[in-house]
Length: 122
Image (cartoon, rainbow, N blue to C red):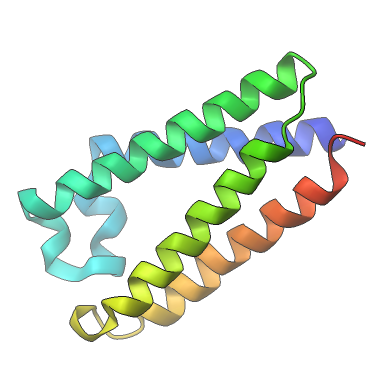
C-alpha cells in the first residue's frame, strides 16, 4: 500500500511537471495572474516543470529499484518550501488569494511528502 501511494504521488508530480512545460500559462494563471502567459515568466515555469520531472522521476526509479527514496522526497519537500518562500517574497504583485492558495497547495504537498518520507525506507 505504501509503495503504491508513493508511486501515485510521484507520478502525479511528474505529470504536473510535464504540464508546466507544455502549458505553463494554464497551470500558473491562478498563481501568477496574467504574467503567466508572458514568455519571460514561462521560462522559469518550464524550469520548475523540469525540476518536477527530474526529482520525481528519479524517485520513481528509486522506488522501482528498491533503493532509498527518502533523499528524493526531501528534495521534493524542499522545492515546495522554496515555492512558498518565492511566493511570499513576490506576493505584492500576485493576484488576490494567490499567496494563500500557494500556502495551502505547496504547504500541503510538503507536509504529505514529509509524512511519506518518514514512512518509507524503513
